[in-house]
Length: 248
Ligand SMILES: Nc1ncnc2c1ncn2[C@@H]1O[C@H](COP(=O)(O)OP(=O)(O)OP(=O)(O)O)[C@@H](O)[C@H]1O
Image 1 (cartoon, protein in one colour):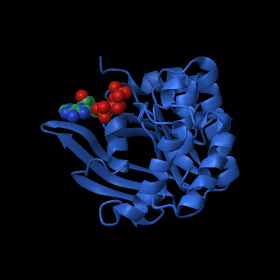
Image 2: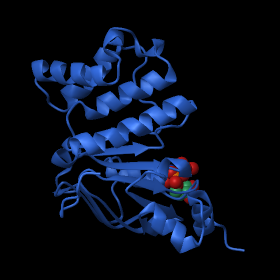
Image 3: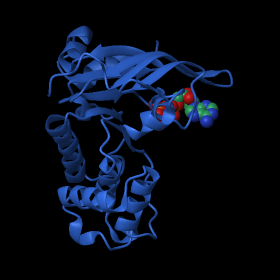
């Protein structure tokens, strides 16, 4: 891991979000530093997707604050989102468009000049080994390759922070491992800060830090080893289950 800067790339404090009488996020505070891979672990219904919807500017929280590289998401959403790359849980490519057209559309949304956009798209597709597939419709790609295109798209505008919401859903084991290793590599190479939400505990094994969310609250934040120690469990999966077990 690159050494984390004092000022976090992502600073979330006291975030609260309700759906009617149901509280989905109940005072969530967490941070992601430069070069840091933070795994957000939570069982179904913990609030992970709600948190991502707030972090990606889709929802406004009822209370609390989100800052990306010092930009307040509510007061200055455009610069905050310019510094953020997002891979959503549900696939969001337009399958009828070519890979290139999908990426160009995203680059245009971020205001990249055409020549710069093309250079960035070429670099990210080459990194994913997909340069040869650029002019094919996204529909022609396998699920694993579509995810690679979504990762390339999230990186085209050179964000400082990358958010991934259960990004390995539907991928086979080899594609899962490849994606995880790629994203760890990005932290080390580019100093990217990563928040990777998952309910698959093995994806958190190599994280710099783990944040466990349960019923909308942070139950643990620290290194994976600390979570094992806190729960008195040898395996991370057992520690996670102990922390999120339903009350007897
Ligand atoms: N649009 C909505 N309207 C009402 N309640 C909602 C809505 N979206 C989510 N919730 C509720 O808020 C809580 C948190 O849900 P959320 O989808 O954020 O959790 P999650 O950790 O992403 O779960 P999963 O892993 O199942 O996707 C749950 O109790 C859920 O039922």
